[in-house]
Length: 455
Image 1 (cartoon, rainbow, N blue to C red):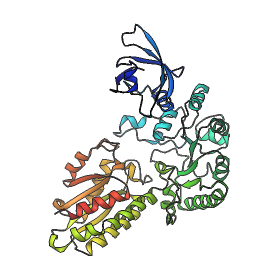
Image 2 (tube, rainbow, N blue to C red; image 1 turned 90 degrees about the vertical axis):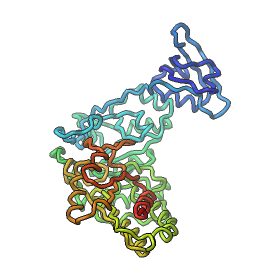
Image 3 (cartoon, rainbow, N blue to C red; image 1 turned 45 degrees about the vertical axis):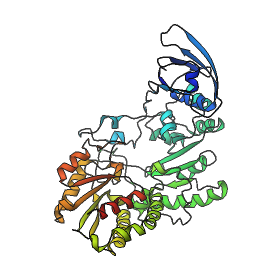
Image 4 (cartoon, rainbow, N blue to C red; image 1 turned 135 degrees about the vertical axis):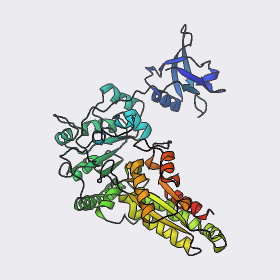
């Protein structure tokens, strides 16, 4: 791996390593990618084989770090070429993407890469792993990993992954566990297919750190054999999960298994009451949609209490101006939850002075289909249509209207939606100010108060 730069004053610089040099091996092993470097840099004692930039000489260097500072090498590339998924899962969301619409090309890339599982928390199936890769995971301690299990029944799992043969998983998980690797797991629940949640949970509990049960997501382009999770099925899953939690907390000291928030929304049930804020423990499955609303509420309630003085000071009749309209965009599944929190803020502020309205605008997903109800899969065109309809139906003054859109609707660190429309495009087409907002409860309170207090 070629070196782009060496940090000034670092140990690497003092040992005569320069930009343009290349690392051939580290710790006695050929360097495969940046994870080898991360592991040994953390270890603090290792050997390096370095090819000088002119290619004339190979240097062997022994490194013994005397502090916790990084060794100081920055590479040209991370060396990771994405390992593609070879499965054809019956519920694969990528396979359900509409082929006739303008989607970003990267959305069609199916990865099943253990390195990104470690780095980014993406879920992998372990179905395309070579013995060398398994041994490498254990050797450089890539832990924790995030593994899609779906079922521990090898025959059923093979069917779900699109194989004509079995797809065993327990033996491989046991091997990783015995090698010191820890992992989080998930079940994508598909009604009438993997109904063996209880057995799978019991098989995994002695090894895994946690287990999330998430409902299958289906678009209009779904596999015809798949069905959407119904209200009754959501209630059934919740009942099972809650029963298992009581058992696992006694045996393992952890709830271990959690149902994704979407199950509570589908079932029309309240989220678990958690006065001690420990039901979801340290939120091990938050990226899987488990505990998002609970975490939101934690920071929401704390921030609302904290901002009491701000409200009293900034929301008074002396500052009263034309009534401002704050429109909050959300997917249909979260609309009731968001509406309740928005109403609480509106009630508190407008007791002081009635000069802004908060309205939640649930957006129907026409792009992927009405069965897709989560906020993160809303596209620019659907948001435009939904907000335009709302503004016209309520005869809102665009000059005094602001639209708040959660950041999960956009590409990470960018301002474009899944359909390649941009925030700038949306703002221009709507003719109102549009603002991208973070999705935590504290940001929710702060942005509403900030917009509401503006003259």
